[in-house]
Amino acid sequence: IFQYEASRANVQLLASNETDAPLRLYGDRNRFRQLVANLICNAVDAYTDAPPESKREVGVVAGRNDDGSIVISVYDFGVAIPEGMQDKIFEPFYSTKHEGMGIGLFAVRQIAEDHFQGKVSAQTKNGETRFTAVLKGMKRDE
Image (cartoon, rainbow, N blue to C red; front, top):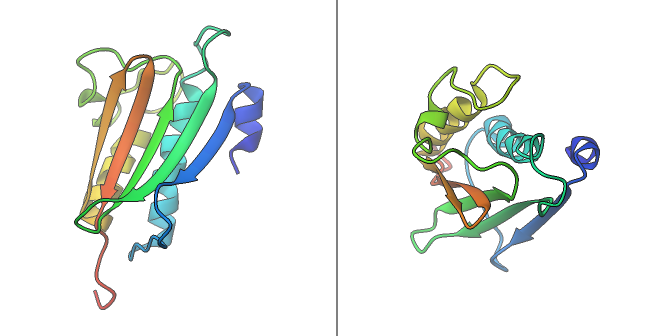
């Protein structure tokens, strides 16, 4: 789905699973897709103003915590989140981009919290920006 935009930005998309066991998350699959799609789109967009020599890679890593929650991380090496803005970027209508409405990451946080009893965080370190969503989901009968 994202290959076209990634190729236009000269970005390689990578995906990996940190566990051999199947990952199951109960909840609204469309909301889950929206959460992951917003994170991947933002990661690709991070290369818009990045220098051409930057490592041009967006990765999606899936795994599981000891408590059974699902962990989805999306990382890039594009333009970093300005220091001190890791929480502000999740506010509605706040954006570091030239274009856009500033609701993508707000939606990601809302979906994680409201639909999957989870949380989302952002961290930039050593040139890598990583968004991590920890999702618990619902029991099957909910």
